Length: 384
Image (cartoon, rainbow, N blue to C red; front, side, top):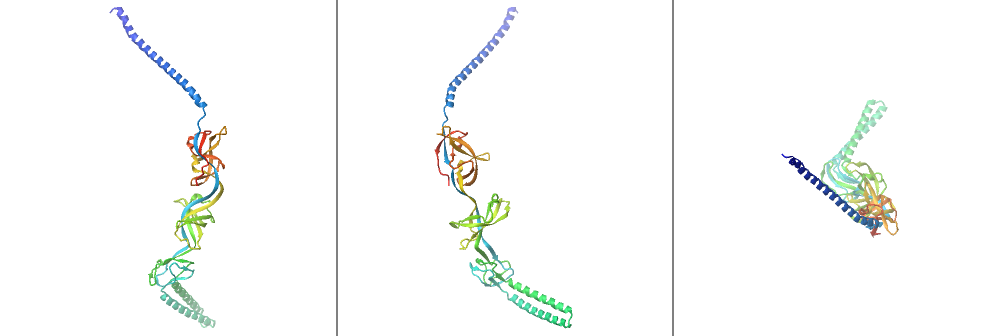
């Protein structure tokens, strides 16, 4: 092969490589210059608007707001309960027998110790007479033995035997009288008899229901409160009771007792309050709505509940304060401590004063303090 051909072969390979590298370098340079020019143009065009935006004041955010007001609040707890008699008993016989006399009428007031039901006691009365006769004989024998012993006609043993016989006779009489007494149903306290379940001539077994007896001159209302009130509720505390059966009326009661045992299932405490019932308008079993009063706040600071912004276990409000030029209002996030809650209302214990203005709608648009605010609605009354 000639030498000229050998020299021309590398040149044919080298030229395309150099050309490819040159084209790539030129393309990269063109892309870099193009992007630099676009960025410079964008920066140049955006810089005036950004400077204008930063120089121009931000537009006020429209919100609704109210002023903190002072009102009277009662610290109480609501619950439901039932009325029950001060004393209540279902009269039942202790022994079986046949009813021979009923000495009361349904719904009639009875007195303590009054005979209500008499069972057939002929057999028991006969046993009483027999025991009385035996007692009389035993007493006479014992007296005669005492006289004979004084004259040394009988031994001491005879006197001891007659004394034992006397005691046995006395015990028999007491047993016969107790058995007969169980055939008499006596009123254990003053009250009103219910509707009887028996009639004259019925034979009843021991434990059968005869009639209920209710003492309702004073009635109790039993209800339960959450366990957090255990340190607040005390005997003598005032309670207001409302009854669905007597709409539009309320009755004042006093706490009678607090159960020392907390119910493990509902985590609640039992409370019993007493209500005077001289007119007998209240009946056991009525459904009651109970309000237990713990205290009265004469000048409580109150805001609508929508003004509260909870965050991380704490409570905040957005308070409006004068801006730098005193002609505008700006926002300020303030932490508050809340107290009594009522439907639509929240008591502010710490953090606000009477007359302060707080935002009730639009808080989510106030992300930082110092934001200018335009109030859409001011002095709207708090709920309630």
